Image (cartoon, rainbow over all chains, first blue to last red; front, side, top):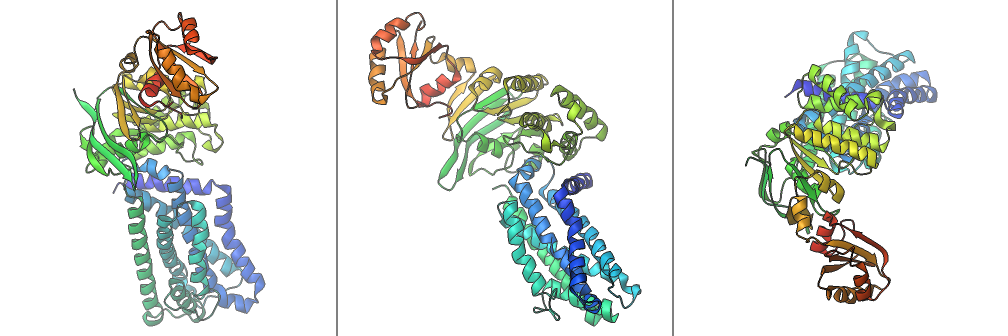
Amino acid sequence: MNVHRLWYLTLKNFKTMVRDKAQLAWLLGYPLIFVLLYRFAFEEGVFALMAPAILIAGPTILIMQLSTHFAEEKEFGTLQRLVTTPASRSIILLSGLLAQLIVGIIQIVIFLALILILGAEVASYAYIFYLFLIPFLVTFSSLGFGLLLASIVKNSGSAGGIAWFIILPLQFLGGVVTNPPLLGFLPTSLAVESLRSVMTDGIVSFEIVGLRLIYLLIWGLVASLIGILFFQRKTAIL
Amino acid sequence: MELAIETNGLKKYFDDIHAVDGIDLKIPKGSLFGVLGPNGAGKTTTIRMLTTVLYPTSGDAKVLGFDIKKETNEIQKRIGVCPQDLVMYDRLTARENIHLIAQMHGMAKMDYKERTDELLGKMNLLDRADSIIKNFSGGMKRRLNVLMAVVHEPELLFFDEPTAGLDPQARRVVWDFIKDFQEKESTILLITHSMEEADDLSDELVIIDYGKIIAQGSPEELKGKLGEGDIIEFKVKATEERSEIIQRAQKLDFVKWGKSVGKHRVVLNALDGLRRISEIMDAVEVKMDDMKVRKNTLEDVFIDLTGRRLRD
C-alpha cells in the first residue's frame, strides 16, 4: 500500500468536505442542534439519562455522509478518473473512510463536550476513555453501512434519502429514544447500553460492558468488510 | 514499427447493445491517431477499455505492450487520460487538482510544482491557479481537464473530445498544446466527432460507426478516395425528389456520386464542380437552395460511407 497516495487522497477528501460551506455547517451544526434540542426538551435529570443515547445518535449520521461522498465520486466521474491512475481502488476507498473517520471523531468530541457542558453526569471521570471509545466503535459500523449503501445507489441524492431508512431504525430501535432498546442486538443498542453502564453506574466490567463492546467491534468489522467487498465489486471494471 | 496500441477483435456488449463490435487497431508509437465517429459510435467505450476502466466482452488489446486485462497497473502508470466530461474536484483549486493527479502518479513534489506552473502558464490559467475551480467558466475547466491528463508526462495520452464546447480561440490553444506534446514523442489517441479537429491534428485516423471501423488512413488518403472533385451541397424542398435529382445529376459524366443527407439536403461530388455549376443546375431541374461548393472534408468521407452526417 502506498502511504503517500493514501495521505494525499485523504487530505483531498477532507479539504473538499470542509470547503463546502453547507457541508461544514452540517458537520458542526448537527451535533450542536441535536444536543441543544434534547437539553431544552427535557429536564436536567432526563437529559442526563438520555445523554448516552444522544452520544450514540451522532455517529449514525455518518452513514449518510459516507454514502453521499462515494456516490458523488461515482456520479461526477472523479472515481473513474482516479481509477485510470496508479492509485488502487483499495487506497481510494480507504482514503474516503479515513476522511469520514476524522469527521466522525470531531463530531464525537463536539457531542461529548456539549453533553458534559449542558449537565450530563459521569459516574467517574476515570472512565472518560470509554465515552470516546464506544461512539467511535459505532462510527466504525456506520462507515460499513455507508459503504454498503454507496455501492448500491446510483447518485448522491438517492444516497442521502435512502440513508435515513438505515439511520432511523438504528436510532429508534436501538435505544436512542427508548430505554431499554427495542432490539438489543443492534450496534446502537449495544453501544447505548454500554455507555449507560459506564456513565450512570460507573460499571466497566467485562460481563456488562466488555462483552457488548466485543459484539460492537464485530458489528463494525463485519459491516465494513461487507461494505468494502460490495463497493469494490460494484465499482470494479466490468 | 513499434506499436503503442494493438487491438484484435475488441468487443464490448451491454446486454443487446453492441457498443464496440470487433475493433482492430494498430497505432504506432509517437503518432497522433484520431478516432472519428458520430455520438454513440463506440469511441468512448473503446477508450474506456484501453484505459482499464472497462473490461472487454471479448478480444484482446495491448497498450504499450501490456495486456489490458491482466496488466492494468502497468498501463495506469504510463497513460494520461483527458475524459470527455469535465472531471475534477470543484472545491479544490486548479493547482490542487493538477497536483492530485501528479501525486497519484508518484511524482516528486519539486517536479510537479514546477511543471504545474509551466502547464498553467501555457493554458493561460496561471493567474487563477489558486482559485477554487467551482466558479471557473466551462472553457477554463476544459483547459484544466487537459492539464490534469498531461502533468506526469505520460507515454500515451488519451484525449476524449478535448475541445468540446470551446470557442475557436481556446480550441486553437488546446490544439497547439496537443501538437507540442506529440513533438515530445508521446503517442496521442484523439477521440473526436469534429472533422476539423481530426483533419487538422491526426497523422492517421479511423472512422467508427455502430461499434465498427468503417475506414482507416491518413486524412488525405481518406479524402482522396472521394476523388479530386468538388463537393456541391444544396437544399431541396421535397424529400421524395432527391433520388431523382441525384439520378439526373449523375447523368453528367463529371458528377462522380451523389447522396441524400438529412431531411432536405443533397451532396454531389463533381470534377471541376465550381466551374460547371450551371450545367448541374440545368441537369437537376430544381431550385438549389442554400448551395455550397467546397473541397472534400472528412465529413464527406463519412457521408459517402454511411449516407449520414457525423452529427445526425
